[in-house]
Every structure is written in structure tokens, then in C-alpha cells.
Amino acid sequence: MSVIQIPAYTHAILSPSKAAQWLNCMGSIGITKELPRTSSKYAAEGTVYHDVTRRALIEGKDCDAYVGDKYEVEGFKFTVDDDNAEAAQRYVDEIRAIPGKRFIEVELEYSHLLGLPKFIEVNGEQVPGGAGTGDFVGIDYENRVVHSVDLKFGRGDIVYASYVKPDTDTREPNEQLALYGAAAAARFDLVGITDDWLVKMAISQPRANHYDSHNMTVGELKAWVASKRAAANRAYVLYTWGPERIDLNDLKAGDKQCRWCPLSGNCKAQTNKIMDRFPKGHAAQAMPALLTLDDTQLAEVLDSADEIERYLSAARANGLQRALSGHTLPNWKVVTGRRGNRELPDEPETARVELSVEAMTQIGVEDAEETGQIPIQDAIHFAIGESAYKPRTLKTVKQLEGALSKKAPLLWAALQPHITQSDGKPSLERIEDSRPPIANLTPEFPTPNAAGLL
Image (cartoon, rainbow, N blue to C red):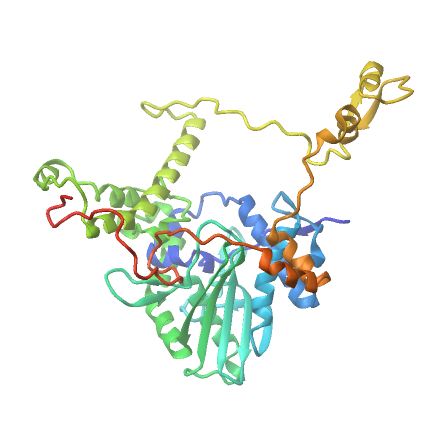
């Protein structure tokens, strides 16, 4: 089977995936423009399963039809497996349930909506000013709805379709989703989409069992985009100027914009914002010496925790990179870390080991008259037999569900009373999380009084 090669994608200058960055910290894309673009295995894996879902939706198949297919993306190699195909299928099923006309992987341009040039010359190459690929756009004429769904294949950070604007009770749309939604409405404007149509913008994150949506009318989206034109144009101007003309006033730190910024952990604006949260000198001495935090103070700490943790992680990575480059960091040194786990080759059934006649005889190969090469897996099997393998166990219910529900639906139905699932444990999450709060919680610990004492 040939390997499917997916070439590197040329990202727009004001790319939708970085919209939260350049809309909130307008100097960030300019000050980082000369930094090398990095790729990750996780991003490459997401690209693979975006392609799997694209093929399934276009070809009318389920994702398990592509199990075993091999991909290569930016030097990373993947083989489509059962678990990830099952997760990708959940997204495919969500898309197939949306009514109306469906469009898969749609080029969505929004540069004209922001007053930006369509293309910008970068190193002699014409790069889109503001555009991206929408994973799914649906036009539901009957209900006057535009659907825009973005697939996120990560399982770590949960991505929300909207967030609560700081110091207000209002919700703001996810910047990437809003740009996609506005661009989708504009692209299909000729088919009769008017300002009173609804735009349903959604994030599908199947491996995290997360689906989140936010609705705005076309008119509301137009107003939102108009309110971002000044920031977008400033970001564009600062990008054309480059790092040498950007100063600290052009940078504005914040959790959203710093999260994926390549300068994170090495940015003065970010460092100032973090350090300003810790009182120093006379201000610290003047603070009341409370023994515990009240609820509001604890919430303020939690509001900052994720941002500070990410900042420190980025700072550690930046420190290691500098030290490896020959810089001397006071009180720090580079040492060799713990070695990884010992591993056999990825494909022991084909990788071969060369054995002497004595070694061949020792493991039980009959008529061993000369040295030879033998597959590693076969050699280990000859030596210790079935004890070389893990005991045979049933796959997990999640892994079995796809095959059993299709090939033996009656058995799958009969198994339901025998399948148990533990309740989810209480988890403290941000207000943006779509799950409802647990009602009628019983206090387990004493809470501090107004003076901060128990």
C-alpha cells in the first residue's frame, strides 16, 4: 500500500487558527515573522484525520474503511488505527446529521471583510492575507441557517465555541469560528443569505467527547467583524514593519493570545503581566496577613493558574533552547536526562536479527548449520514460545462497539445490561465548559470566614 503524502500547507498571514493571537496582541505576528515555523506530531496527526474524515464524507464511506492506510505529513508517519477512526467517525456522523447542502473543506476568505489585501508578498511568494479552509460549511435553505463546523482532533486542551468576556456577563465567539462563519456567509451570499439568517458555529472535538456551538445572526457577525477591522489592520501594518520596529506597547499579553505564540516564555510583555500579579516591596508588606483564601481570592488564583503554568512551561523550554545554543544561565546547567524505555523495532515481524549457529540451536531452530537472519518476532517465539506474548484479552467496549454494532447488532443489544460505566468524578472547570454544574453540592470542608480564618 502506498503512503499518502500530505504537503505542508501555506498559511495566511492573518491565519484563522491564530486569530485569537493577532486580534488580541497585534504585534505578535510581526515580532515572530522571522522565527522558523515549527511542526509537531500532534498537529500532523490532526491533519491525517482531517483527511480521513474528508474522504469518508466525500466517498460516502465510514472511517473504518481507511484503517491501515499509511500517511506521511511533514516528516511524521502514521497508520490509521481503529481507535482514531472511531473518533473520526463521530465527527462524520455529526456532519451527516446536519440538514441542507453540505460543503467539505471549503476555502474561506475574509481579508476583504477586514479591509486587508487578498495576497501579501513574502520572500517573493504570494501568501493569502486572511483566509483558511473551513472543515465543513452547510447551507440549510429551509431553516435559513448557515452551519460552520471546525474539527479539532486533539484530546488535551478543550476548545470552546465562545467564551465569557472578562468583567462582563456577555459571551464572545471563538475568533477562528467567527471568521469562518462570517466568511462562509459572505461566500454564499449570492444564494439569498440575508442578515436575519442564523450562523451556527461549532467545535467538534471527538477524542475529548466535546461538541460546543455558538449562534449569531449574519448581521451580528458582520458587526463583530467590523469591530475587529482596526485590530486586524494594525496587526497587518506591524507585520509589514517587522520585529525591528515593534515595541513593547504593540504587545498585549493574555492567556488566549500567549497560549500558542512562538514567543511565549520569552516575551517581556507576558513576563510583566505574570510578575505584576505578585506584590513586591512595601505593597506586599502592607497586605493583611490572612491565613487562608476566601472564595473570591481562590477563584482569582485559579483564573491565573493555567496561564501561569503555560508561561512557566514555555519559559523552561526557552531556557533549555538557549542553554543548548551555548548561553550561560546563572544557577542552571544542562544535564543528560533519564533514558527512555527499551523498545524493539516497530515491526518485529519483518525486522531481522543475525544469529550464530549456536544461538540458532539454543532457541530451538532445527538443522542450524550456518549463521542467518531471522525475523526478531520469530526468534523470540522460538526461544520462549507463547510466554513472549501478552495474554489475549478482549478489546475495550469503546473498541468493540463499532464492529459489534454493525456485524452483530443483536449481540450488541444483548450485551447492554452487562456493560457498566463508572460515574464521572467532580471536576472544577471554567464557566465556558458546556456541561451543567452539579446541583445541591454538600459542603465537605469548612470554608473561611470574612477574615480568611476557618
